[in-house]
Amino acid sequence: MPDSVMFTEHECRLARLAIQNRYLTRNQIQACLARRREAGAATTLEDVFLEHHFLTPEEIDELSRLVSSEAEAESGITRLFARIARRRGLATEEQIEEALRFKRALAARKIRRPLGQILVEQGVLTLGQVAEILAEQERAREAAAQDCRRYKAFVPQEMVGRGPRGTVCRARHPEYGEVALKVIPWGSAPPGALERLRGLRDLELPYTARILEAGYTENGIYLASEFVLGIPLYDHVAGSVRLPVADATRLLRPVAQALQAAHARGLAHGGLSPQNVLVTERREPRITDFGLACNGGGPADDLRACRDLWRFMIAGEAGKGDVPPLNFDSATTLLGELERWPAEPHP
Image (cartoon, rainbow, N blue to C red):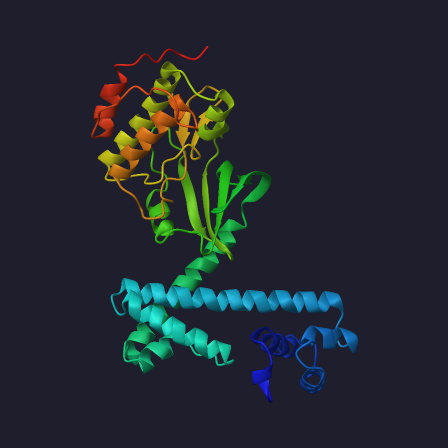
């Protein structure tokens, strides 16, 4: 493409994909590029396509979607290559970041160069190591494609929640029946989340929504878990302003039982909060989002979260008022402490 340096990366991709997908011939693209060059920076290639009737608005929209999909796919491939290199101990975080900065600088000059080639040129990897990473990368991509096919078996029914970490909807599946389906976009999923979720699949923990399946989608990762009809503890307390000690005890005790069972298996939630403890119609708590903590978390994080839940339930969101002290250093001793407080069934 002559003088492509004056065109944006988006326009370069747009022109190439228009030819590859037979929207336009090479001669037509050359004519459009010449007119775009004459018009200057105030005009885009899309403007030229429309003004001279080379493409319809619908065709331009479809091409733009192809450009976005290609760019996202290339970004995902780069992230996967970097993750494999780090996991194998072939490159440090600093070396990867330096190579990525160089890759972005080249991209700004419309030069596309794979991360592996840059790392070889910088003396971090050998060609043999790059070949090994690419082979593993291809296996991972095949597995991801299979995940995408499995994901299509879930039929969304209604939206349940939306937040910075993704969306949750009620869905149906031919094997699982009704499920809670959570989709976490790329960039929002904590490192190692998918591996942790797959390790927790079908694990039976008391008062916990069971994880049924987890995998890749085209836009991130998905998590299918047992559907629990309830509201977040945060909303339950907000509606009541604050809870009596008996109600707080009744809710915290099952949470402690769930954590006791998890910790005995060497597991931890790591991100327990009033948002991921659901309160059912029977006023029982059910824990969700196991495996989604940003740093993996550990038992100590769970115990701190229990103290925060106790204060939140009794003192409300403002945290005002006297809160009976709880002294514990494990989920087991927490259960012992809660025996000191009444927990009458809710009327």
